Image (tube, rainbow, N blue to C red; front, top):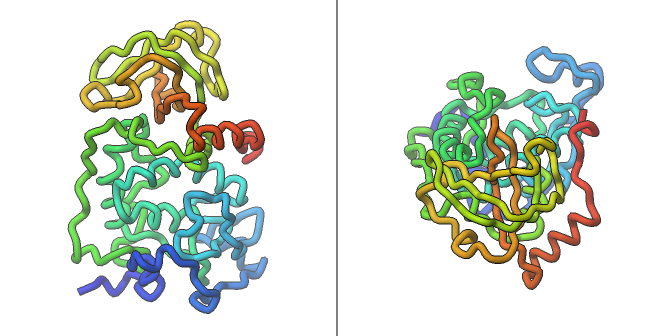
Length: 309
C-alpha cells in the first residue's frame, strides 16, 4: 500500500511520466499569496531578509524548468533568497541529470531548489533522498563530487508529509548505473547543455594532448598546448605544467581519446591537488552544436560567484 504520508495529490504529476512533458494548467495548483508578515518566517522558524514569494520558475533555471509545475517559493528550502543565487547554485547539478542515474533525481533536487508553492514547506521523503544518493553518488565520484552535506538524507522526514515519486514499497531503489563509457566522455554535444556545464565548471580549456597515462585508477592527460576560455582557480604555478585527470577513468573507455590528434574542449574543476575533467569534447568547427555553443560563450557571460552573494 502506498505511504499515505506522502503528498500523492501533488505528486501524481511527478509520478506519471506522460505528464512530465506537458505544462500544468493554472487550475492544477492552489498557489499561495504570501504576506510579508508571515513570509519572513516561512521555513522552520528561520527569518529571511526578504518575504517569501511565489514566483515563476524562469526558463534559464535549467535544472527545474519543465519539472512539472511552473511556480516556486523564494526563499527556497536550501536558504537561497534570490533567484540569481538559485540559478548559480542549481547550475552545478545540471550535468548530473543527463547521466540518468536515478529517475527521481530532478524531482528530489527541485523539491529543494524550486519548491512548489504551498502554504507550508514540504521536504522530500528520506527514502527518496537515500535512493537518489545511492544511485547517483557513484557517478558523482567520477567528477570529484561527494554527496554534499547540505543534502544529508537524515534531515528529511521519514514519516511526515513529504515529496515522493513512487511508494518506497513499490520498487527497490535502482542500482548505480553501470556504463561502458567514462561518464566524463559520455556527454552529448548540445549547445545549451554544454553552456550550462561550462557555467558550472571552474575551468574551461582548449587543449592538445601529448600522451594519456594510467595512474592510481585515473587517466592522466599530458598536454602539449592549452588556452584558457575560463581559467578559474588554476594558479600560475600550476599552469605551465598543467596535468588533467579523468577520475576513476583508468579502466573505462573514452572515445574522444582514441585519437589524440586535433584539439579538445575540456571542462573541469580542481579537487585537492588534482585538476579533474568533468567533460571532454572534440574541438569540431564543422559541428553545428559546437559552433552554437561557441557563439553563446562569446555573447553571454555566466553569473559570477561575487554577483550571487
